[in-house]
Each structure stands twice: as C-alpha cells, then as structure tokens.
Length: 417
Image (cartoon, rainbow, N blue to C red; front, side, top):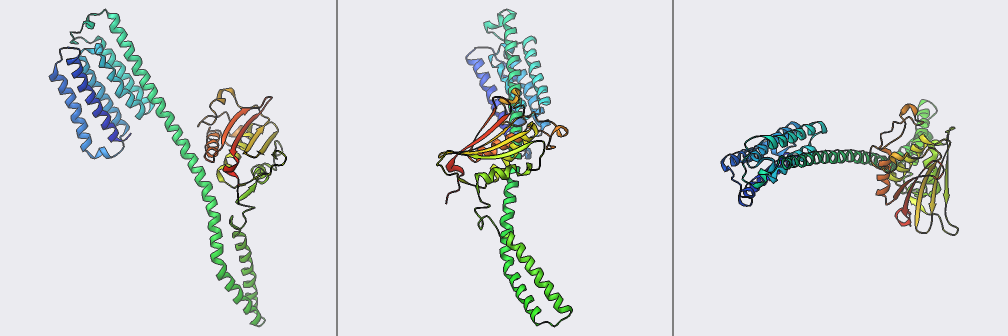
C-alpha cells in the first residue's frame, strides 16, 4: 500500500470521528466532553499531516509502518468512543476501519494481531467503567450491552478475514498473471529472433556474394600451390555460408504456407511431435469436419501452440495409455480438443480449474515429464487461449479420462488471403 493511500484513509477516519461527535451531540443529545475528544482527534490529524508533508508520503508504506499506524488508530478511536458512550455508541463500528485496512495491506499473521487489538478494544468499550451517556439505552439490561459486543466482535473478525482473503487472492492472481506475461514474452522473443536472423541473412548476402566472386577469380588466376589451395577453401566456405544464410532467410514472409500459415493437421502434428518416441503413452492427432466444408489454414500463434502443448503435457502425466488431440472445424467455428484415458479431473478441483495454484499433479518423482505441479499450467493455458478469442471448457469423459476443449470463431484464427 502506498503511504499516500494510507494517509488518505487516516484523514477519512478523522473526518468520520468528527461527524460522529457531531451526531452524538446534536442527534442523540448525549453530553460530550469535547475537549478530550477533540484533543485525541487533533493528535491523529497532526500525525496524518506530518506524514503527508514528509518524504515518506511519496513511497510505499512499510509493513511495520502500517501496523504502527493501525495500532495507534485503534487506541485513539477506542479512547474517543469510551468517553462518548462506549460500546453503546452506534459509531463503535468505526473500529472496523483500521482492522480492514490492516487485512488488505499486511500479511495474514500481522493482520491477525491488528484484528486481536480490535477485539480487545471492543471488550474494553463494553466493560470499562466511566462511560458517559444519558441515552436511555445505557440503562438497558446487560444483555443488550453483550449483544452490542458480540455484533461488533463478529463484524471485526469478518471484515478482517474478508480483507485478508481478498488481498491474498488478488496477490496470487497477480503473480500468476505476471508468470503468464513472462511465458508469452518468451514466446514472442523467440519469434522475433527468427525475424532478426532473416534480416541479418539479408544484410550479409551482398558482402558474401562479393567475397565469393573475388575468391573464384583467385582460384582461376592463382598458380598451383598454397595460395590456390587457400582460394579454393575460401570459395567452399563462402558457399557454405551462403547455404546457411539461405536457411536463415526462410522467414515467415518468404514461406507463409510452412511457417506463418498452418493447416490444422500441421498444427496438431507439431503439438504431438515431442511425444512421438514415447512408448508408455500413445499420442495421436486427428482433424475432422463436415463433408463439403474446406478445412481452414490458421495463423501460427505462440499463445495457441504453448497453451495446447501445456495441456497435452498435463494429460501425458495422467494418461493410462492414450491421448488424442483433435482439431474440429465447420463453417463457423474451429476447436481443439485434448482427451486422455486417465482418471479425469478430481471432483475437488473441477470447479476451480483455470484458477491459479489449483493442481492435483504428481511431484517430479511421480511425473512422466518430471515437472512439479504448481497449479499454474492450466491457468496460463486458459489465459493465453482466452486472449486469442477462445472459449475454454474442462470436463470429464463419460467413462474415464479428462477433456479440455478450446473453441474459436473461425474468423478469429483463420489465415485468409
């Protein structure tokens, strides 16, 4: 949390306390000792002003700073509430504010400490002597006071737990998204290297041709001897360099049908190719569509290749003996399906598939691929596929095995022109 945000929240709490005093005095007609109340609120306001004017306002708040400020706010607010009716003051719910901020900004263990301080403050407001109030509610039986205590305690615990859980979930999702961005950036860099190699090949072509011409003339004019042998070697090496540059120059722009454009059969074969030598699991590729409808070519996209490959890799760890990668098409849609004959998705994780850190994958020692399950593979794959316009669906096969399907509108992936 930025210190500026923390200062803003504390200013809001100061304003809230001032409004509380006004409401208690004008609406509830309670006798309010303004001097001590305003003194405590002014102390909090001065602390906020000091923080706003300090260099610390332009940086992130340290955990110990958040903890210290929230503890101070709980203590200051407790004293103000204690002299304005204690737990019977309806504005005692303001104790939830610092507890919620701590839950959102601090680690769970530290947030529990602030929550405990809030619970202790509620107990103090309930049983501390000297609460001043002329309200008739102050004369109610002790059951009402206990009911107020319980409601406040429950509200504090709920607010703290909700804020802590929400912050932790947001942090985990952000981390997983960052990993996804890293994976995608790596794939894009690999694609960019191909274009860079092609550009280098194009730039080196002219000087290499000049070298080859000069070397050929040397071979023709040089007498027999070491000089001629060196010239022959130079011609051979120049020819070899030309062949290497020719391969590098086979960029997507110069061989669209092979590189940038893929048939569906080429796509699924490229995905299953790493498992061609596997003996314990058979990985097959299939393309199917209705009669009379031409199969589309699609653009080679790193997101699709990486995502489907990750799903196949996951299936390879769980399959008993077979994985089928099927590309289906019709006039409106294209889909890729990965089906295995393993145990299927566990019921405990079925509803959470696609979320970060959800996995039932075995450890490295029990995995065919040697990868340790972190619960990010499906999340990354689903995120990448959805970015290309796909709808991703997870399900178990009727008898056994898992099925993962990605479905696109045909126009979203088809390579036209």
